[in-house]
Length: 99
Image 1: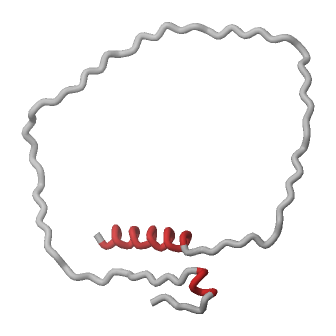
Image 2 (image 1 turned 90 degrees about the vertical axis):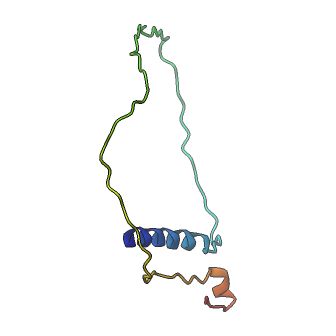
Image 3 (image 1 turned 120 degrees about the vertical axis):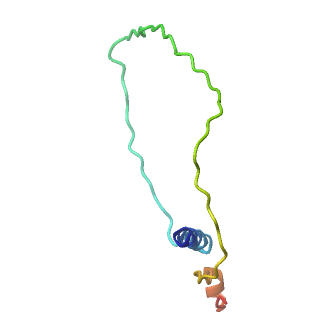
């Protein structure tokens, strides 16, 4: 239970961290793509093979069966969980702090 809460918290931190970013372009980019010339040397002929495929028959159903299953009891406990305080880039620029 605690591991699940911790993993969920870490995922939430990652998601909040990505959405709280403020991105500004600081430099223009330049890309030069190489140019190629392609020339046909010979005529081609393609004959694809043919296949006869016999697929299996699959029947799905259900039946009653008696099995032994464990029973689980639960109780409520108060535990300490991590908290997250995020100050976005825009708030940082404006001089605000999270809280």
